[in-house]
Amino acid sequence: MRVRTRAVVASGVVLAVVAVLGIWFVARQVGQMRVTFAGRSCTVQADGQVGLDSQQMANAATIAAIGAQRGMPERAVVIALATAYQESSLRNLTGGDRDSVGLFQQRPSQGWGTPTEIQDPRYAARRFYAALKKVRGWEEMRVTDAAQAVQRSAFPEAYEKWAGDSEVLTRALLGEATGAVSCTTGTEPVMRGQAAAAALTEGLNLDWGLPGTESPADLTGLAVPAGDERDGWRYAHWLVAHANDHGVKRVRFAGLEWTAKQGGWKTVDDGGDAAGRVLAEVFGDV
Image 1 (cartoon, helix red, strand yellow):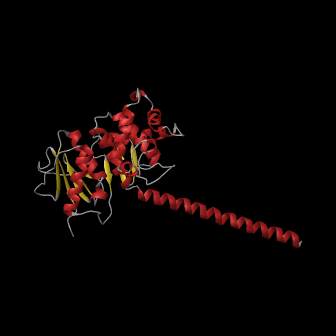
Image 2 (cartoon, one colour):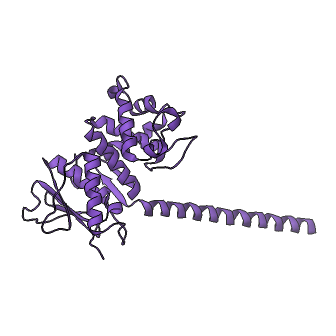
């Protein structure tokens, strides 16, 4: 009888431990999901929806812009974004497998450049597009095959799972959708005033190859000339994508306005002030 009682007690203890572990595991998973969800401060909607955090969004916008600046077709941008998704989760990593670094996990030992060069997102993107352009018939290849021809990964099929998200991002970032990039930013901007405006101007010039921008009379920020609506949305979405790291408070184009406070786009009456231009306001100096 005593042995049986001990067995029952032992079983009960085991069940209790299992239950506690189960509760801990579920709580841990829920906590991780909450952290992941909370970090996705940007939403992209363009015949599909993608969620990214501000760092991923800024890197994606730069990759797309460099592709456009180099005259690469949209398919190339999709392939580049899918590659960076797989290799780094669209993050500019300081390390990786062996000597791999950066968005595309390019290796200095394989001739991609110095570690410092590769960790420049613009340099890394330019090198990727240059290598892709040398692949014969890449335009007709599946995304994963074209990416693999450049990367030579141990997991050649891995890139394909990012093709759909990359197509959504490409449509938005190359101006094929209206008000498609929405981001919320922190209460304290990283940059303010003239420093923020100067950084935005430099970023636009480096990513898009744009000439100098003008300072509008009614906003502390920039006025970016847009040749047509597609160009306008390219620049507007780029500005929102870089809002968190460049202190962007407001972006206005084609009768729509995004604000850091609202996080989304709404219709506004701009009185024609933004005709042919994308207006961006930065947070003022404290």
